[in-house]
Image (cartoon, rainbow, N blue to C red; front, side, top):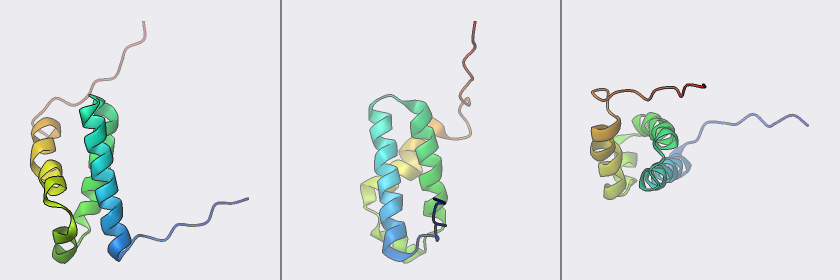
Length: 88
């Protein structure tokens, strides 16, 4: 059975998805799982950039702070990118 085509999120559903992704990234961060944390953070940030200023205000402040400032400190472009694991 083919999968249904997904329509883009809008309104409250989009805000809820951004919050969910930020919380998931924070959970990975607390578990010291940097690779999945980085991936979820990038997805959350991409969705966050699509929000209007009014929608951004609906995101709880602690989540916004973590996404924008704290995680930028550790995952920002000034830091060394993750390396691939060598087999050997």
